[in-house]
Length: 391
Image (cartoon, rainbow, N blue to C red):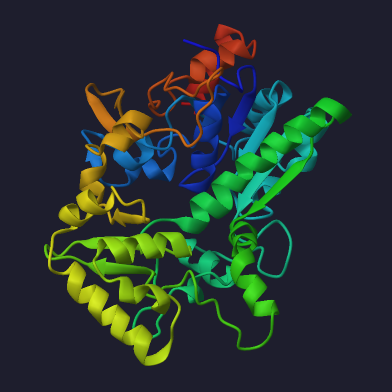
């Protein structure tokens, strides 16, 4: 198997739940050695989340491949010392505690970077390490709300719509954590020193609003009409079988091809009309799309190149030819035997490709192995187990 792009990078992962583990799994997929530090007995809270594959959480399995697990009690001084020993030889530490918790454990940036000045210390939080909201609890919906994103998508009664997947956790937090870590590693090649990465989910989502911000700053009352479903050329339509088509014929050439293919060239000049013409066009397009099934429309319009695609259901994705060729769904072995379906990798690299190199670990599966790598004598390792410092 080819070496990964991040081969030789050691990551100490103190995070749990979704954003931090998603970030560290990405690093692990691309070759980093990720040591996941978990609480003895309970481990990452995701281990208890349904649905399950036998005794193992499918949610946990999809976020923790390619990692090794050590179970360490961070509330015991000796447990903290073990993590600092890991830090001494690490390149990156990732934590997702509320601001101040890592410091109380003796594992904040100052303590860790005192032990290893080259360490890149990444905090993944909802609101950031600083600011008046820093210590507030929150979840994905709260971060989207504070970032100004939740209010941009509303139902027909004007109520904000909660997305069906975790936009802020993954996009705002995990991906930007990886970006910050990689930038800090590149900077370290020049300076020889690590630094603190402050990856806040609110900040990450807020910076995505650049398109809407441009309309907002153009003047009070200015709206964004083109990409929010206000015009029939960029909308979702129901088909005869109760499924849906996504129409994104925004550029004039795509709209012209669509109208021509549908046999309604008279619609072409009405693309961005308002008022009665717009409402009539919505009604006529909607009525036409309801005369055939989703797949019938997709089959015929695919030949036209007019930005019309099916709204896919999750159950269809594994069999979709594009998903299959791109490897976006694959089988992964698990510790209890058998395999589970897992999602693939977001970025392809032709010389140092990502890969599933390790199945997700059992809680504490690699504790003794990693303590041995740190140089702990066998008698000391046994004493740590007997004292419940590790498990």
